[in-house]
View: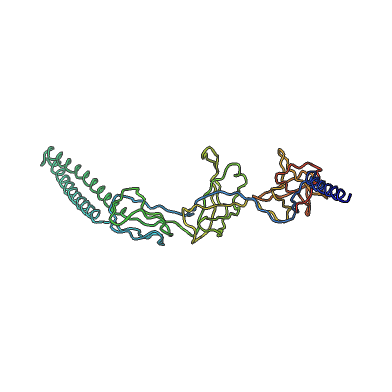
Length: 355
């Protein structure tokens, strides 16, 4: 009898344990949720784009005429002042041409004086009947030819003088040589790029903003510039120019925006940088994690946690960052909101806080 009683009790105990696992209790059937408490704080809204660094004042120096560079006087990275000579040209041929042109001009002028003197003398003799008309016409032709030769010689001299004056490369501004395109002994042609000189005391970043975000951009807005080459470093800038017209790029309308960065001895012209333009900034506002939002059409909701019940509430929101959003109405400081995390909650559903 005792053995049978023990056996029955053992069976009942096992059955109870199995029943506990197979038929969960009321607590196990309630969804476990994570909650966050609504707090006040500061929030910044921004637009992120990629741009390239450039100088706010940059000059490209071109060859004004053909010539041979005897020696380059500066290298990339050198500081130069306005009016500094950047190269020394071989001037021998140009000076020789100028001397020849000057000699031709002098000879033409002498011939012009002689021709005019002879013409004046012949005119007097012709009027006195002592010179023939044929002589007068010949002297007139000589004088006319001399006038033309003087004009051509003077023009040739001016061209030779101009050619010599163009054999130079002068920096039109103070700054740093950021590009050198020539070397000693190189021949250059008119319009060929020789140098680029930039003012590095004021740098700029040019970015292209999508037309959807463009209305948020205003002159004077602050910006943060970072570079992958310098992790952990941030450089401050501000919006100084917004292009009045949009342009189409890869089927997308973009607005050119320029940001002033100020001086930097770390960032280099041409570097690609990441730009974060701060479009709005608010303090002492209610802030909600974006992951708590439930969107239905153009409306936004959250599940408010109240004594184990998930209450669906519509809220009005304001500015947002990548992780947080401003709450304008619908919640108060200290309210506890559920993070749905993939759960399909219903209004009024019972929930429990996750351990």
